[in-house]
Length: 263
Length: 357
Image (tube, rainbow over all chains, first blue to last red; front, side, top):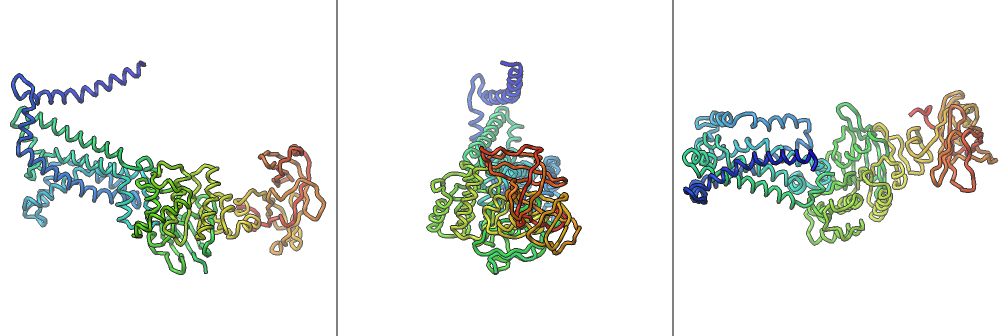
């Protein structure tokens, strides 16, 4: 083994320890619900809690809606910028980065100020419209990840030539987007979608301040009042995120023609 | 009236003019090549015909219909790109059938048509493969089949062989021409490769700096170039600069030696500087008797090119290259050797101007 290999393994081991030790400790702690014996009691309690089901379902629904709206907004925008307005790319990239710079609490106060019940567009006037507002705020929050994922996917293919080839064969803009562009950036869109899912599932600030029954505030509530259940919830949430990552990998491998994405 | 009529076509960008006063009538079934160096406007002209660029002025008509402002998906023009542009997510069969599906043709019609096209390009068993499973040459043939499947009125090919290696380029070139002849489809072919243009085309449009330099058959373009640019761009050429001696006889003095062109120089005056051009294959190293031109010079360089030997002979300021067939029993001349070269009057191409590009 060379000196360099030893160093590489050492660095990798330290990184793995840094990541896995807290995770294992949390897992171990979540199993200690019953004194003196390891059990899945904390998991049973969490998974049996009706609020877990309600909040998880609510956030899942919201995440799916966020993903759909995000794709509808980002894919055509990124495509058009790549195809016709490449000069606008730095501006759009800057705009999509703003949600990373502006804290969520500032955003949500802005929303409350603009869309409160006495404003010209009272989105917080009832629960359904507040859900809509929360969904749009999640679209904004997930924008940096979704835009970057889709943009990277589009850069990997020859968007202009593929578009022109489809046009010369009689395809309309809708057909080009749905049949040619979208299938070729499928993996990128899925990556963006799963990142969006992971963000929405754990988001606390916006859901809490808009007073919606989301999974993030539930996590906080359990964390503030229980001992072992929050650890179990953390492990469950990790599991969900990892499942999302695994899905990206599986779907990415199954996409036909991926090797010929760029010429 | 041609199938494709282009009149007064012009394309201006913010800082430059890509195409100026482009005029061309292409007959039904004709194979026309746009030939020129990079940036001469040939691809821009092709893209205007395809509808990917909007002309600044002029009109484009196909079969009498003005399509100048018509979107590309409503022109019924097939296009083959340098980078193949096959849809990576679709199989070969789906790629070929894409245009037919978009046109909402019945499935019963699409499948046999796709098979017919695959047989035409000699890839009948490749329908289920994906583009990445094919070689470059195969991908380009699929791209050709895809463009032909929709039965376009005009087929446009934008340097389709540039990304392929030399051997495949030649075989695919012949295949393209054979398919074009078989289908009788009107074709516009963009290339910077003079050999491709000469071997494929019914007519060649030589372009330079956005302007048409000359339009003609390969025979006319090669043998009777009108400008120095065309003469130098198409084929190998020696340009000789001299002074007109007798315009009526077509006599010019090159480095003090008088030669005659078959064509008179009525538009020139005695003493005026003019340029003439000679193809290497028409100049002989033998001091053959006859009424052709003969010049004395010194061998400057000898290049062995396989089947031919290229000899460069210097007269003074000017030099000429000549080709002789390689013959193992004949020893080529040595550099420094004094020789006489001969060439017929008909071979002297009188160029417009002084020979500056």
